[in-house]
Image (cartoon, rainbow, N blue to C red; front, side, top):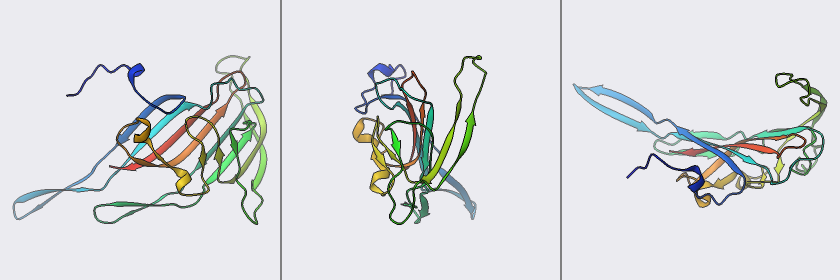
Length: 200
């Protein structure tokens, strides 16, 4: 039986700091006709889970900053199954200061981060007293994230997999991390957004 009046306070999740969860998917369905008969072919499909969470339970002290990474999964279709091939640690960035929440991994023979340049992020839409970012952005490869709801190290395939079901989040099983985006604002609790893919 499906209940339509579910209180979010009763959503039993064992992961810390989670603010919101959104999942969506779409089945790949094709209708074919032959000899006056119809048949539906359902191909393997992927879904996405987006999670927003507080990175800790402490207000951030320091200059504003952002960090993120995108993992390049290669998806191969084997008739009735999708295979996810790990495409590497992913292009990453750290802009401004993010404390100990994010750092670049060490890569043998390569200086990580790979590039540094100036960036500005300013908006007066909430008034003239809003903070703005005028800092250096460092671009690199891979990211180590330390905070709620999970510590992530994108340098390995296993470091980019989370079994969301084991934390009380849906029936998705093992999900593959697509990207992380972290925002640190002085005086506020840092917020991290994570996106995962899974097989339907």
